[in-house]
Structures are given as C-alpha cells and as structure tokens.
Length: 119
Image (cartoon, rainbow, N blue to C red; front, side, top):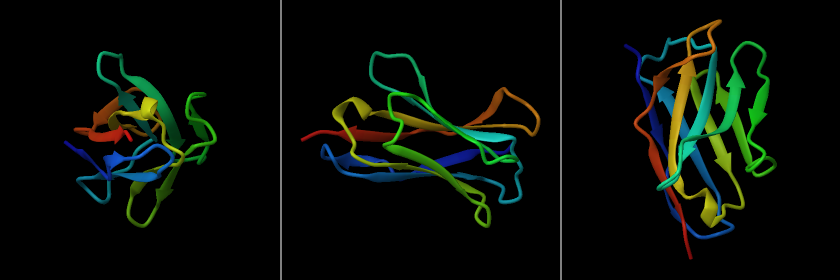
C-alpha cells in the first residue's frame, strides 16, 4: 500500500510563509489527484487545495485562495503547498491525500504535519 509522507510544518509568526511537501513512499506511484486538507483543534477537517495530475487544474478553498499555492514536482513525484501570509486561523494539522487514477475518492492519506501560526 502506497503511503504519503508530509513534511515542512512548524511554528511561525503571522505573515510568515511555509512550504509543505507530500511525497509518496513509492516514487513510481501514480495518482489521479493530490489534495491538501487541514483540521484545526475542535473543528472538522476541511479542504484546502487540489491538483489534478492529468490536467494540472487546481482548486482552492476560498478561505486560503491567493495566499496558498499547490504545485507538483514531476521528477520527484512530490506535491507542495506554498503558504504565504499565514494567519493564526491557519493553525491546524495539514494532511496530504491522493486519489487513484480516474477516481474521486481519496484512498491515500498521510499522517499529517502540524502548522502553528502564533505571535
């Protein structure tokens, strides 16, 4: 079973930037789409951003649009989430998820990486 491994989380101040990475345990893994979700304490998990591997079309939550960018390094099979102008409300555990090709269900999930935005 392919696993996803996130990295790049940490403690930052408001206005700072972070880049999260999501890499599969098998470099040759092929997915239909990769997405980032997040879950803040006491809240439900919410969608953040999605990247379709075939079309490269991206989708973003309105809460982070224009601040976050999802991208992919094809050579490394790694998906990134560049987060700029971070706010305290962005504090959450961020999860990477992926679908199988031509599927819409997220069958693969990472363990999550903590992002804390605090002054």
